Image (tube, rainbow, N blue to C red; front, side, top):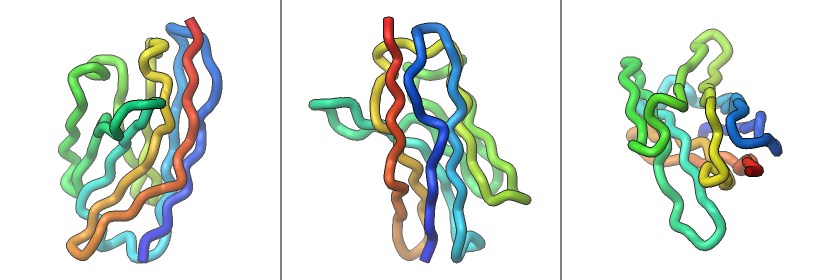
Length: 115
């Protein structure tokens, strides 16, 4: 079992920054990939960024150059630094971890970017 707690969402203006955190506990040694997803109203959930156990990262094209995923192994926490935010980044952001046996989701944190 892996438990995820997200934090860091909020309301910002376009061009500003936010940092999301995802703290994991439980069987964290079994985590292969940690990622951030987002879901805007009326849209499907999409993958935003991911980081593997080996440290490889990936991003959806729309956030490349603006978002950075990183992790602090000592704190068992993965971060999503979001810079130059745009109104189209408005969504609920979910932390996701994949283990060999199953996938876990956090509860989500709202990010709202005003123009």
